[in-house]
Each structure stands twice: as C-alpha cells, then as structure tokens.
Image 1 (spheres, helix red, strand yellow):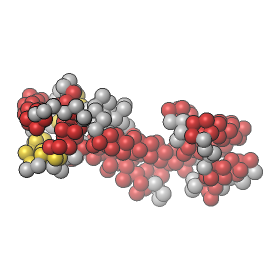
Image 2 (cartoon, rainbow, N blue to C red):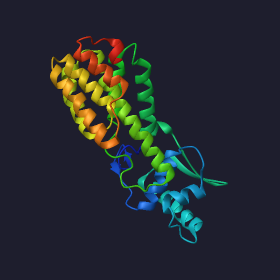
Image 3 (spheres, one colour):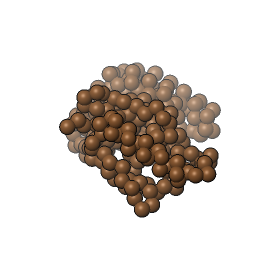
Image 4 (spheres, rainbow, N blue to C red):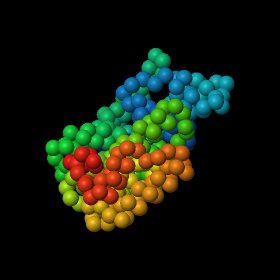
Length: 259
C-alpha cells in the first residue's frame, strides 16, 4: 500500500513513495492541515482552527466554513491516496489520527534526542544524528502559511531546534579535531544569524585551533560592534573569557566548554 509522509520543516508537503512530493495550493486548507499535523493525534478545538485560518478576519459563519474546509481536506486525502492519516471529528473540534513516524518533525525529535544522548560520550556518533536532523530542514519552516498562535509557536520551536542542531554539529567537529573544515560553515552561519553569539564563539575557537589567532580576535571585535549597534549589549561572559584565553594563550576546556 502506498505510504505518504508529511513534511513541515520547509514548505508543507505530502510525499508519496510512488509520486513524490505534492503541495496544497489552497492557503486556508494548507493552514488547516499544518495545524492538525502540529497537534497530531491530539484534538484541536474548532475555535483554535478558526483563529489559525482566519485570524481577526473571521467570517460570520466561521464554523460552517471550517466544516467545509475539513470536508475538502478529506477529499484531498482520498485524491492523493492518503490511507495512513484520518481526520476524526471530535466533540470540540477535530483530530488528525496519523502514525507519527510519518512526520518529519517526529524524525527530527528522534535524531535530536539520539544526538544529545551521545554528545558527550561519543561525539562521532552524535555528529551523525545531528547531521541527519539538520538535513530534514528544507527551507523556511511552514513557508507561506499564516501566523496564528499555534503555527507561530511551532515555527519558533523548529527554528530553535535547527540552531541547536547546527551548534551541536560544530561542537562535535571541534571535539573530534576537525576545526579547519568547520570554519567555512561557521562563517556562513554567523552571516545568516548575526546575533547568535554561540556561533561566533565556536568560530573564534575553530580559527584559533587552526592557527588563525588574529582572525579569531577580530571575530570578537566584530561581535562587540554588532551587539552594541543592534542590541546595546556587550558580548557575554563566555565569549569574553574565550577572548582573554586566546590573548593569554591559555585556552583550555574550562574556558571554552569544548571538552
């Protein structure tokens, strides 16, 4: 029997093992499915769904409209050949019954947890898990979908997971002595997330361990300017200790947190 996966870590898509990825062109039905997937196997109140779909511009007969969209989504499932997910009517709303192993966010949680479990005792194995988790992200999470409370909270969680996966990849590469191959990625991540201080600390460490001490110290000065200009803040204590350790050539695990 055909299997369909549901992917939210990018634009929302249904991926068939026979026909490949498919998207939903109707924006409100796409939002409905996204919310049901985020709350997979848990009931979502009708009022929550209405708020996510229409925001403050809800129509007079919003509940009737919601019922119509649910009906359309059920028909779409039948058209796409979705047999492993069922929209169940609940006394206070709706519930999407689905095997969570078919959701990319479930795979993300599993790979991330496996990486955290091995992060300290086995960084090589942890690196494999964190890399697998990071590759699940295909672009901006739920790109093009509305900004309701449920979707916004989910996007924020997913983006934090993405950053944590990248931080952990860098951590594992530093632990295993691959600082030179890491410099390029960290440079890109700093450009993409200029206020994310952890990437800048890791870049300083990777540069220093690659024999590029002056460049590592320039990262600190640039970070100070960016934080002052954007947030009116100074670099955190960890980064200041790292700068002092590089200046004094006394870098050790206690300073960097990189065992």
